[in-house]
Each structure stands twice: as structure tokens, then as C-alpha cells.
Image 1 (spheres, rainbow, N blue to C red):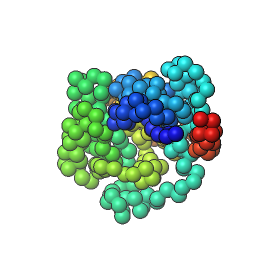
Image 2 (image 1 turned 180 degrees about the horizontal axis):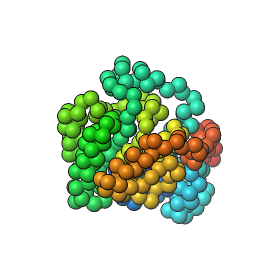
Image 3 (image 1 turned 45 degrees about the vertical axis):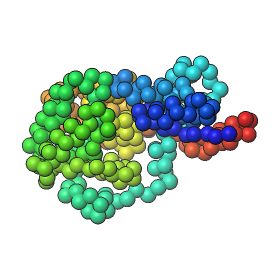
Image 4 (image 1 turned 180 degrees about the vertical axis):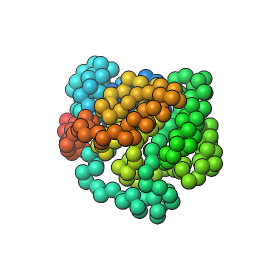
Length: 278
């Protein structure tokens, strides 16, 4: 018997999943049952859930939605987000090491930003101009940015290229990173003043670092999140107002709802049990 483990909601993963269906391969799905109504990922995620045999969602709410999709509760176990569980087991690299040795970032106080394309209504290309105007205006006010590149969704290249062009004009205030890697990214999240953009990591992981996160636009619409996440439309004035307010706000202090102890161990035990029963 073959088990294949799948993670999340990307179109690339969905394509791989579809190819296994005729062969009766048992699929294991992490992070199913989540909603991102403003993104095509929502469709791919549900496709993967329906095709899968074992389900390990990140919260009880997501587990309930998996139940709605597949019609039974037998193979659903809520385990939290494994990326957060790992924080207890790893020493993150120091910010000094990250900024000096690896990425040559010239400042310590910054907004950590990631913007992905709006894929449901990509005709609203004006959102890119709003992003650029916001970044440029905040740089003019003295703020600095570390920006990680967006993904490969339609419109991603245009967005990344324009942000990179803006960084070339403001090299002392804007650093664009192709890819931090998980633990360097977590070090940056721990160091930053605020998180800005529309990445799922802000909704899931930022609370573990006691950071406020401003989520812009509809990409993550409908997604469960911690109370440190503030949703904001693509409105330049509202985004800047939110940045000014929450960059000075006291640290977020509540627990992360996506944390569950022993999530990885519980997954392993469940897989072993199913393996023996087949």
C-alpha cells in the first residue's frame, strides 16, 4: 500500500493529486478545510480534500469543513499547524546572521511584506498600483521594507518586477528577497515591526511571534485567523493609517489558535494505525 502526503492548496499540488486517482493511491492531506474565497487556491484545496483518504486539518473549524466535503468524520484529525509546532524544537538563526551574512539587509526596523496576485479577479490590475503607492509613500515617511517575492500565480511576475524596480530606486529602504527559507523567514518575522500583505503565513504564524499583521485585499477572504490580523481593502489611505497605528501598538499577546502540541506525533500514530488496518 502506498501513501502520498500532500500539503495545502497550490495548483501544482492539485495536478499531482489528480494523477494518482486512477491508481487507488491513498492520499494524506495537511491543511484541508481552509477557505480563501478570494483565491483560486480555494478550488484546488477542496479538490485535494475530496480526493484524499486521511485528513490532518489545522483547526477544529477546518476539520468540520472537511467533514462537510467528504461526508464522514472517520479519517479526520485536527493537529494544528506543524510549522508552529517546530518553533519549540529549533533555534532560529539570529537576525544579525540573517541580515549580514546571508542577505545584506542594512536595517533592523522594518515592515515584513509579501504580496501575492489577486487571482479571482485579476482584471483589477489597479491593486498593483495601490501596493506600489503604499510602499513608496511609507518609504517617504521613513519606513523600511523587507519584501519577499510573491508566488507564480497569474500576474505574479508583473507584481514582482514592479516591486523590484521600486527597490532599485530605494535601495536603502527596500530589500527584496527571492526566498528566505523557512527559518530565516521566521527570524525576520520575529525581528520585524509589522507584517503587511496577503500571505497565509501572516494569518497562521505571525501570532506566535506576537506581531500584528495587516492583510490587504480579498485573497485570504473567509480564512480563519488569529485576532492579530487586521483586514484592509486595497485603499492607500486606509493601509497607511493601519500601518501607522499598529506599528506603534503594544505586542499581540494572545495564544496562537493554530498551535497544538504533538501534532506531528499524532499524524505518525494515525498513519501507523491506518497502515496496520489495511
